[in-house]
Length: 332
Ligand SMILES: NC(=O)C1=CN([C@@H]2O[C@H](COP(=O)(O)OP(=O)(O)OC[C@H]3O[C@@H](n4cnc5c(N)ncnc54)[C@H](O)[C@@H]3O)[C@@H](O)[C@H]2O)C=CC1
Ligand SMILES: O=C([O-])CC(=O)C(=O)O
Picture 1 (cartoon, rainbow, N blue to C red):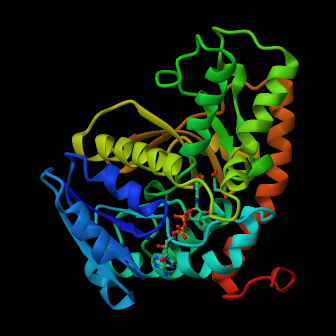
Picture 2 (cartoon, helix red, strand yellow):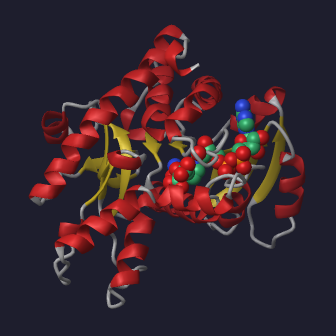
């Protein structure tokens, strides 16, 4: 039974995510932190008749109290996209928010698992890792970029064109990162069904740009929140199952720091990247094993090369932000 902290708990993702986590029997204390409204959300959730205690913490002065003793910190803090924006456009606001939260984690809960939802994930995860490295508390097994929504969408969209594919049972590996062309679903893994080249192309495109569908439909009111809360709760629950209950063999696709993670050597060599999303086995200490990349079709290999090109820049931007404290002027 552990303490889990949600940073950004009053937001569009934070509220339903906290609601879903309130249902976990592995959480004894759910601490909700935000710069606004966290007390109200906590009071509301605290009436739900599950055993966990819920506390609300509003504003920077209460961040230490929120984080102390945390087993896991989930971070959906920051601004979402509006139509016409890329995830990278969020960097100038969210980079500083995520850096400050990571600095507080380094100080108050240096051994906590940190799950990063705030976009652009391809850059915010490097920001968290660089902050923890600077503070000498970095353990690559304990920091995760939450890319589960891409996995959730993959199963759903495949089911929509192949109803015999059960979306709740069949998991599809998604590798690369979490934005547009960096999202590479490995549809060639689905051996039980056949797809035409056109179907694969359309599905891949829809999965890569699934976030845009929601941004467009919400028409200025933000991006995916409910499906993201579901995906975030799924990843958090998998990690808690593996680390608290000790369940073995739990695998999720997630964006992690490769060097220093068990099993990551071959991915490090094949991608040449410091960070990459792929299937990871979870265990008591976080990452137990980074799985070797599955066999890829020639089209998937091409997509991975495109993803690598884009990821390089995203990663460098996150690392540079922590090193220099500055946002590249071209993006201001
Ligand atoms: N990883 C993924 O797959 C996905 C990521 N996202 C990202 O999640 C983030 C949050 O999205 P929404 O919940 O829709 O946004 P939102 O605007 O509804 O909520 C964000 C919350 O963060 C809070 N916040 C702002 N600065 C903070 C700080 N310094 N400390 C703590 N809390 C702070 C705000 O007060 C607000 O309550 C966005 O960056 C969005 O792009 C969204 C969907 C999927
Ligand atoms: O599209 C966005 O900006 C939010 C997000 O990451 C997603 O829905 O996958």
